[in-house]
Amino acid sequence: MATGAVRYLTYGDWRDEQPRWSAETGRIYFASDRDATPQIYSVDSSGAGRRETNTVNGAFDPQWVDREHGLVFGGFADLSYNLYVAQPLAAGDSAARAIALAPPGDRAAPEWTWAELDNPHYARADASPYERKFTLDFAAGEAVLAPGVGSAQGAVFLLSDLLSDHQVYFALSSFQGSGFGSLLDNFNGTVFYLNQSRRVNWGVGAFRLRGLFYEGDFRSIFDETSSGAFAQVRYPLSRFRRLEAEYRLEHSNRFDLLPADPFDQSGVSPELHRVGWLASNYFSYVEDNTLWLPTGPIDGGRLNVTGGLVNDVSHGRFDTWVASIDYRRYLRTSLRSAVAVRFIGYYAGGERPRRINIGGSWGLRGYPRYGYVAGTRAWLVNTEWRFPITDFLSVGFPFGVARFPGVEGALFTDLGRAWTPGVSQRGTLGSAGLGLRMPVGPPLVLRLDTGYRFQSGNVDAYGLPASSRGTKFVDFFFGFNY
Image 1: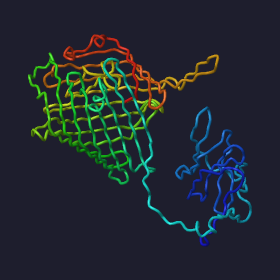
Image 2: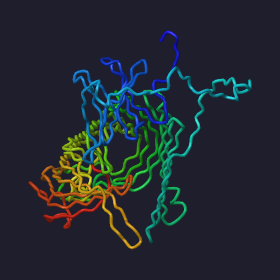
Image 3: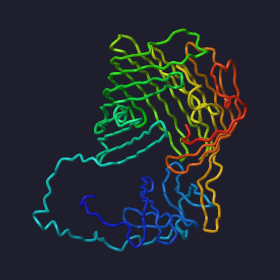
């Protein structure tokens, strides 16, 4: 310490790794393969060393535990990795014999030279500011053709700099009907810039939307042309918790197509045609510390609480306000199995309250994933026990062996209800059964659910199709577990 000289404690044609210092014994414990099989060795400050273990299958990751007055290390036995504790070896034990861990005397570090440093041009390097150079990280495109109707096409691009402090997102799409003019008229685009160089992340963007849309179910179909700008701020409270806020200003020209709902008893209908400026404010609290398997989360929890208000500035009224909560918890029952619980609550109001759909393989299983089970008020509870069935499946063919990914099972029970103020008499829907999941490859996960439907109360008000009224169901879809 006084001279600052550095010398080897161990040296040789082998691997010495995972050193751990013990203040109680004054020794450094480490793993070494100098005897072919990895074993635990120790060395003191003078360089005197000895072997601490003599196992058949090897030992690694040593750690001296003062309370146990022993050495804890990892080992492999019975086709699995295990933890072991060993008491200090006696001085006469063969495994504790002194060994030479380094050549006698001080050995200097190997000498090497850097020829370029002799050149004055390279010997001095001035600091230069970091330059933001964007590169393309991701790109995707799609196209759809409907004979006699038209075609649609779209593309998505994501660019970022080297540190991902600055990101730019582009999304473009359009629908073409009878002529080229419809291609430009139905153009949709979004551009968004995100700055993550400081703790407070912020972003700005602009958009243009044009087309026929629906929210939640097919009773809220509307044609809209809107354009505007938005800004976001994200403040991380910790590695797993953050606050998010968004402000949006847009000009909207919307025409609602509202077919008569035979179950709606409110007698209230919003103005069909709206033209004006809208100001939207959203605030969210987010938690997420989940640990994932290829099929979805297996441990931890997630929480999203969001409140929002859309103000019709041109007409001085609340167009929409919404409050929602999404809570998920994963309780492990073994290394690769867990009980997963999810609760969703949704409540919206205003002149044009936005609806939410809770049906489908990602929500209330056994019921339509689009329309029908939707409303401006809704709640959903999902519970399931996830467990592994196979790690992989190999099938032999004349040309070779085809290996398929593993299969995960899930025993599930779902309960949910969705309604609007005018259709408040809707009952509760439920389902229970067995699900199978196969991760073909990120992000594709195949899902097969089979089970039974059950209901409570008046379910005719949902207007379910005949295919969703039976007791049994089989549903095939794709996507990660919730």
